Length: 193
Image (cartoon, rainbow, N blue to C red):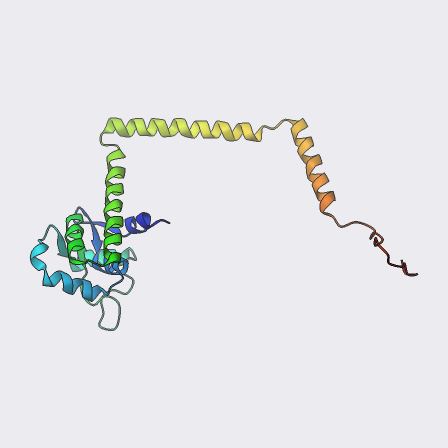
């Protein structure tokens, strides 16, 4: 799986927006989640609510049910605070805060992932007519594939016989010889041979 696909798997839809969570970003940037959040809090004026928001308990529980967070919140491990979600604009702002080589490469990959998702969304059908055309095209494609598979299964009897002879010949070549051959060279044969 390439890096853009890995990042796309970490983009979630929450509150009708595509976001990435602080723990996933920290993992990508190879920093601790707490350190990432401290950097954000030191520059909180750069992150208005449409750039970053903290998940509610209900949103967090929904993610937990989807096995994104397996441990929940706890003082003995797992997530101790409700995570922060960063929109695409928040991620762009975050790229200005983190200036390491890793952060720059990760931000480029993240932006590419968001662009790829936008392109996929643009291709999706928008109207009922588009959906109907997509279904029609899908059914035609399905029928074409079924015809191709049926043609492959309809091998004539002569071809089947030839394939069987080839398989038998290959099996005979792979079998060990029935009688061992005498060694070649200057060996003197013994009485056992």
